[in-house]
Length: 182
Picture (cartoon, rainbow, N blue to C red):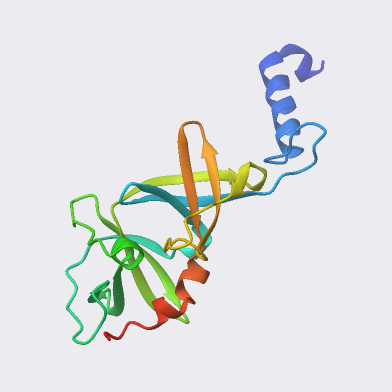
């Protein structure tokens, strides 16, 4: 006697397994596959931002950094994180000149610049989201906006707009690379 004939629930599970094996995330019917990527979502002032999760090594609570004399005001200092010195950068202050108030929700996005760890201070982390490249539109900023060159795409998800921060472009910008005070 066939076991599948007696157990409809088991047969349904086998059908689900077969369908999931053939599933391609982001592929709509008839439109071909759409590229999907995962981002860490966070707030910088009133702006909701995201960056590719592959560029973030870890998310840390805000440590008390040691100030570095002769550095720009947006460099909060150096912090010892598990024996490794991390440069703490206030992202909002770098972008807008306005200091990020440190609260219990404040976090550091830890990434690396040429193997040197950098911690970007953000107001809060909202979590992880998945984005489809087909949902993006070009980000338009005023000519004098600090987001020019580092944010080129944005995503509308419901009532929320997420600006995609390109960490590589941020870290390689002339302004970011020159942390010495004038």
